[in-house]
Image (tube, rainbow, N blue to C red):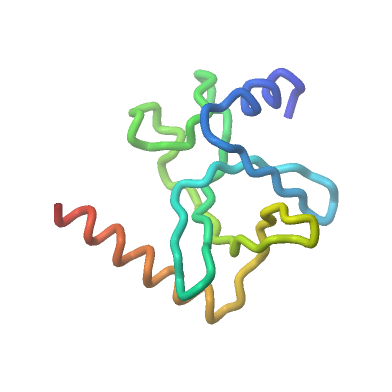
Length: 112
């Protein structure tokens, strides 16, 4: 990703979550939704990507198409020793609980 693309993403209206893989590659996400399960919170993260027209929303509702067929990620929100929120992989059990809770929330919204 070029520096200009990074600058554009960092100016995004919503908080941007930056995740780094084992090889040092950075990936940018936005929190689509926070799903509480028990006493824990989980973030539904949607990738931010620049399309050919320069749209970076990752949201299919804007009509640009950049959010179509987008894989979302689920991350547990924990607090580190300094009090900052960090995103960690959920356990398999937590993942299934969040997936079910998310589907219920989406179903409820569609019913309204």
